[in-house]
Length: 454
Image (tube, rainbow, N blue to C red; front, side, top):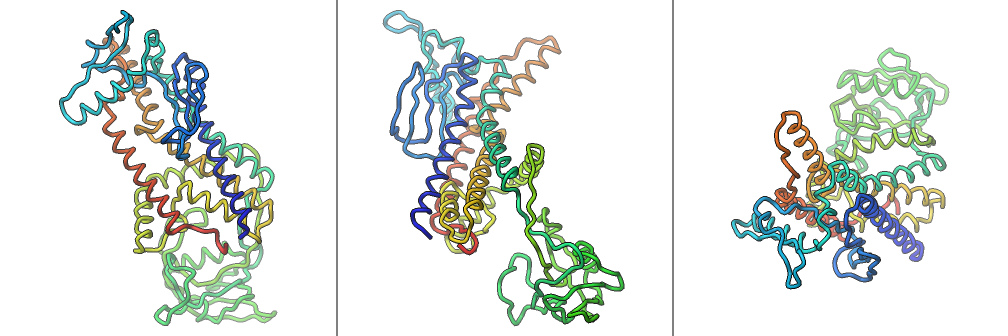
């Protein structure tokens, strides 16, 4: 690897992610200010402040740990029913000041009370009509959805740029009669593919039938074979039955007899669900196919990515647990498992420094990497749990539903939804996110994933 190129790749990735974080927070701040809300801070990063500057009523700044960002919108939490009586006080100059009474009955009650008090310490005289919780529900949705929507838009435009120019490359079997590229010597479980055969491994049916690389399969159990898709279906449907295979070798018609075996294999190239199917042990000759497309093609591809991302989110705790197992040496790290920003930076560096990759491949891969991170961040933030943006969106939508039902039934307005009551859940979710983030960062340092053959 070239150290300078590696560093350039890492810096490019880090700057791109920081820019994405900044744009995410602008997605919250701009509509909040447009709707009359008060934003006191716009920060990229967490921890100690490295640099800041106040412009108007908002402090803009950078913090030491570049693993996120935030905007502080005043009045996210309502005062609460137990605090209303002490909501308005006056200071020594006679000016009205909003304060929230604290309660000490129970740990969670105290946490909620402390959060309300900290929130309302920022409220100044004249801010009463600018508080976030008083905004109409749809404005709250726009403000909170603005951040993750920006990430998804970033991903869309980056994916579109790659798909429209560089294209999406995939490896497909050569069209026409199926020419064998390789023959497995033994039958390996799908999870162990790639390792060398052992004496205890059963011989592959194709090897038993005498097939060799370069042979052209022309028939399977009396059915004339014309392409790989047809042959694959015939093999899978044969389960563990007998198989008579016709093939050509150097212009000579030959045949071999064997029995296919049943193995757990992916349902298709796009569906990785494993199911028991017939297995022969041959791979086709392939070629790289490039597919390009515009906005509609990009949206179609992102639809599939969304399904994969939701699935990945559902299994994220298990995947992170597996990374923890790999850290302590109990198992190998899954090459398709999650990585942190640290891991993404390492992969970006290896890509930039890879000596065999053409420059256009490097640029396309880095753009796809940044787009993938943005897409995941955007979808993740729509999860309807506090402290994620989706939790605030869910609260606003519930407020709209609750008030709508009250109007239909002629009942009094139930008022604003009190998101503070969900703070115990937010603390649990935030703690889980912190633990998973630390595990992934440690994993990316101790048992990092690398580019193939890098």
